[in-house]
Amino acid sequence: MTSPAPIAAALTPADRDAILAALDQVPDPEIPAISLTDLGIVREVRAKPAAVVITPTYIGCPATLVIETSVRVALDQAGYGGVAVETSLSPPWSTDEITERGRERLLAYGIAPPPRGAALRTLRGGDVVTCPRCGSVDTLEVSRFGSTPCKALWRCRACAEPFDRFKCH
Image (cartoon, rainbow, N blue to C red; front, side):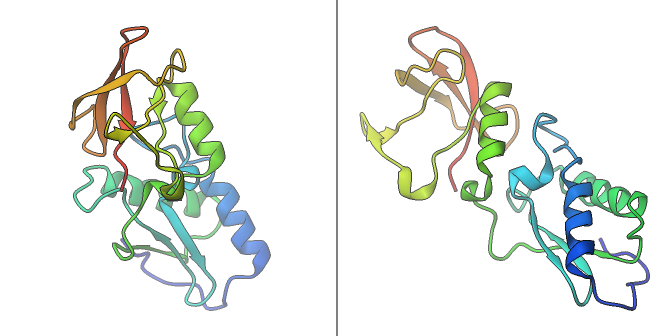
């Protein structure tokens, strides 16, 4: 989605900071406890041509249009109506894009954040997944399909609670 008329001047560093601050207030439509910036969907605020570049969590994400619209509304409300919104699928989004604050917010919301790529370790032939409720690593993937396509359903063997986990990619 692109705005109809890009602004004539390039964005300044202060403009970029203001845009990022505005977008930091935009929640992910599927996980309202985390912002689009913390989820790593906001890839870039480009100075010239002025644009916000977003990448959905996966190519078929059903929330992509809602995300584009939410970014557009936030830009308009912050006075940056001439800044374009571009969706880029390359490079693809990765769970490594989630910020540390985002990982903490996911955990507090009851979603197990994946470890960063270099931190992947194996337990019983799979990833070590910590239960967001009790902290146990005695967990089991129940289904590759969770509440949204980008998450899998897991269960903790210690507390018996089910929980979502972002699929590592």
